[in-house]
Image 1 (tube, rainbow, N blue to C red):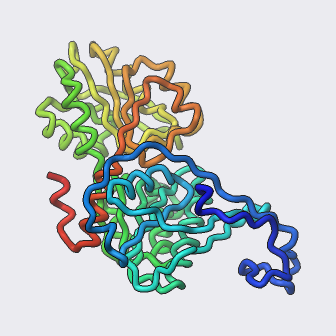
Image 2 (cartoon, rainbow, N blue to C red; image 1 turned 180 degrees about the vertical axis):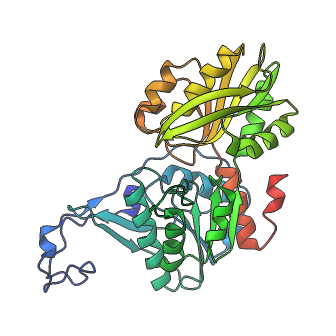
Length: 368
C-alpha cells in the first residue's frame, strides 16, 4: 500500500489492546511469533477526473486490494475521489491482516481486486476485505473483479472434477458481496453462478478504438478457437472486416495443437482475438498456422494478460508483430520489458460503470 495508508506494526503480541483475530493468548500459535509486513504498491499517471458529483458524495467510496492498486488509483482519479484508507499487512506465515481506517456505515462501497497471480492469495484477500466491510455495516458492497480467476473451471469436462468457478461465486456472496462487476468473463454464463446482480463489462470498446487508429491494411479478425467465435464476430463487425477461425484441439491442460484454419487469410493482416493469454501456447501456434497459410502479418489482442510460465519468452521470440492487452492484470517486470506487449487502460470504462451503478443509471449504454 502507499505509505500514507499504511501504519507500521512490527509485531502483534498478546499484550496489545487490539490483537488480530485468531491470535489470542489461548492459541497454541502465539501472536508474538508473527511479524506483519506492509503490502507495497505502485502508482502511475491516471486519467483526468470525470466530474465532481461523486467527489462530493459522502455515501460513495472505493477501496483497493493489493493485486492491482494502480488500476484502482486510475479509476479514482477518473472519478475524482480518493482511494479509501485501509491497513493491509501480512503475518510472517503468510496470513492476511486487514483493517478499514475510515467509517463505511451505510456507504455504497466498491472494492477493486482482480484474482490474478498469486490467485489464491488475492482471492482470500478479497474475501477478507469484504468480510471487514460487511461487519463495518457498509450499505452495499460491490466486488469489482477485473479478472475473475478460476473462470475456466466452469463445468465438469471430465469425471470427478470440481466446478471451481461456481465455488468462488458462492464464496464471494457469502463473504458479503451484494453485487459484482466483472470484465470479459471467460464464459458469459458464469453470471448465472451468482444469486446477486452482476454487471459484465467488455474491453472491446478500448481495443476496437486502438485498432481503428492503427488502420491496418487488409485486416481479418481471427478467433483462436470455436468458443471465441462470438467474441471475434462482434469485434470484426465493429471494425467492418472479415472473420476467420482456427480449429484447435487441446490435448492436456495448457497444451494445445492447432489443426486447421477456416477462412481465407492469404495476403491478409490477421488480428488474433482472445480473452486470456496464459502460457501463450495457443497464441503462438495460431500465429504460426496463419503465417503458414499465407498471412502477411499477425497482430494479437486479449483482455487479460495472465502471461504465466514461458509466455513472455514465447511472445518475445514469436513472429507476432504486437500483442495488445488491457490493464485488468498488472504486467510482471519481465513482461513490461518486452516491446511487443502494449497495455491499454480500461480505468475510464470501469469508472463509468461504477458511476452508473452508484447513480442507478444504465450500464448497457457504455457498450455503445
